[in-house]
Length: 175
Image (cartoon, rainbow, N blue to C red; front, side, top):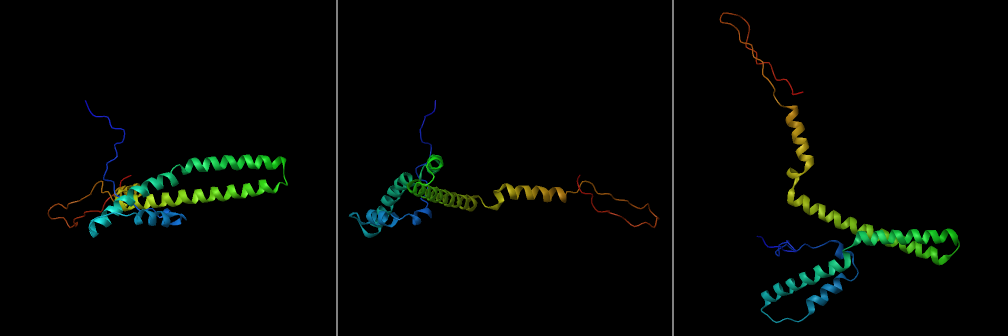
């Protein structure tokens, strides 16, 4: 019988800084508040403990701020469609037009946020796995092997006393 754990994620997952955090207007204040909270310890240990505390608070802040971006985009799209339906009936309503513009801006910001996060995830994966583990590299290697695969070598040996030279006539590519 094995143990059933709800979270099988290891505890020692490395901390990764997210580029998207720098674009958030409250990020630097959040870091300052966490860093300025008093702690007592030796100088080196103090820095280590503050960084550890900051890691935990940043993870929680990231989860509260950025998780569910897809759901937020879907909800904003639905809201935009509702606003546009209302505009069909009330074409000259300035409030609806302003709401539509704000919702479009929100959708654009959310999509940029999601794209930035996926871009960073992709570069981390590429850095960890490298070219040699990519499907593209493997396909190119297979094509190269198939192209230069020697299927059979033809040789003709001259009989003793004959004047024909030896031929190790090339290779025939695989079909």
